[in-house]
Image (tube, helix red, strand yellow):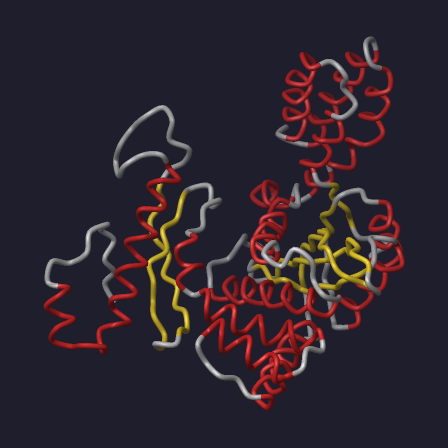
Length: 386
């Protein structure tokens, strides 16, 4: 199908509506939303197409086809992209708000124990459709079954495993608490990324991380060459217990942030960042260690605490030099998983406070499953020679 990327609608649109009546509504929605998303991208960029100015914030990067199921059937949209990947049109979200609200209302209210007749009344007001008690129960059961099957699916060999956590607000026994959402991402032998699993826990304590990591092993996770994560105490202890003997790469981005926190004078932050970046970008480990030694000596004169910290911690970010050079840029930080967390945050922030842990796990699982499915049909993240 050829998409209309121009911000103006076809001149013969009214004639088409007159000839085809309601049958043209799917095409009309596609044209309207494509135009709205294109205008939204221009506003985000701060520049018209092909315009050059000093204030534009990013570069346009084509379009990505996305097919969504609506009450008018499946409609394919052309979603505008930007080079940084940090833009997503709200027009598309707003255009499908009723469908999303219906699904979330059924799932969330069912979990909260709201009477099914009350759910039917709310969804009718919200979406203009009636929902029976049987439909509510069936929809919730089907959704939970699909997500649980995905979370417990058998795994296999994954050379690289990334671990990270984010926090969501959940009501537990009448009190709003921040719970940890533990997420694991893996790169398979074919070079494609997969979201391996997710767990909602009361904290990032070792006991929760250990239970989560053990569940991955029980599902068949094997062949791990490198674990990439931050230095959180609970995660570190659990990783040693479950993945003992497997190489660990401490996230270089977090190391850079940790180092900056030890500098009290603003004018010293930029030179330190440059020096650490040079270490991480060295040609090999020997060169990186030589640069680190020089930095430690230089810092010892003015900031002994920083020098000691660099000497003890920065080597944990150099494990990447033992792996293929083409892979290093992609395995030296947890940034790839951070971007996943940003997408999760975009979906969960509208909830503000989840009614319980089950509802939080349901929504996060659905988002992660969607992302992982897209990765499976996309191109490889990296290439393994062996």
